Image (cartoon, rainbow, N blue to C red; front, side):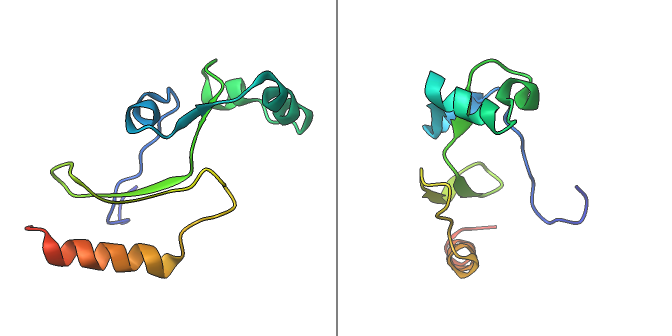
Length: 97
């Protein structure tokens, strides 16, 4: 999207999530529970892998080097906005443009 100042990416195939070690495969009971709540992962992703990413935030410089990572398997626990902003400020002060 134009005007954001950063890039957003999608990974329906889960290839990137697997490569970064943040993919987990749902068991049959979890898949059934999702379907019970009207969540069809196959329809949503267009894939049959039954995987979801661990909720994560990555700060990545233009050259591709990962500067900061927050990852927590508990989807209810997310980093505070100030935590992410502080990491971005610190990273911008320690890396060349």
